[in-house]
Image (cartoon, rainbow, N blue to C red):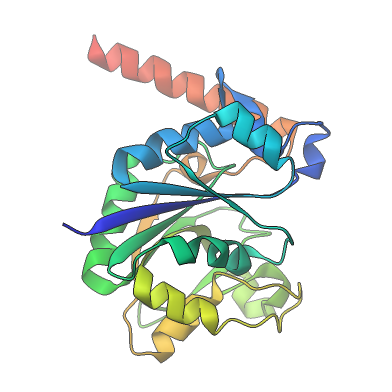
Length: 248
C-alpha cells in the first residue's frame, strides 16, 4: 500500500490577524486552525510534516505532538521553498499531500478523492469555482485539460476572467514532486518559488493533471484576518448543527 505523507505549510506570520499568536494558532471552535488540519491529515497520512516559521517554538509547544516531523523554514521564500524543506524526510515511492495550516475546514472525503486521483495520474490538485476569484491563482485549461496555474499578479486580463481557482491543496507522487521542486525558479512578480509552477512542469513532462473540484468554498477558505475567522466559525457551527440533526 502506498504511503501518504502529509505536508502542512504553517510558516506564515499572519500580520492581518493583529495578534501576537501565529496565525495557525488562532482558535476556531475550541481548537487551533492547525489542530483542525492535523486532525484530518492524521486520519489519512502515515506521517505528517509541519513546516513552521514565525513563532515556531510557540507552535510546537501548543500542538505538542511528538509524532509530527517539525521542519523549520528559516527564510520565507514561497510555497515551493516551504515544501522543499520537508522533502528530505519523504521517500520517493509515496504520495505527498500538501495542506495549509490556515485552511481548517477541509473534508476528509475530498482529500481521499485527491489522493486516489494522484495514485492514478501522479499529480492531482484541488480547485474551486468562485464568484469573485480576485487574489487567487487561476486554473488554465485547454480542451478541459489543466495546463498551468497563473497567479493573480502574473495573470493577463483574459486569464483574470477565469473563475476556477487553485486552492493550493494538492497530492503528488513524491519522486515527481522532488524532481519538479528542484526545477523551480523565482522569476515571477513575487520573486518567490511557487509550488504552483510544478503544474506547468508536469504538463511539459507529458503528465495529465488530475483535478478534484469542490463546490464548497468554505471547505477551502483560508483565514487571513479576524473577519474571515468569524465567518468560518459561523460556518463550522452551522455544519455541526446540521450533522447533529441528520444523526437524529
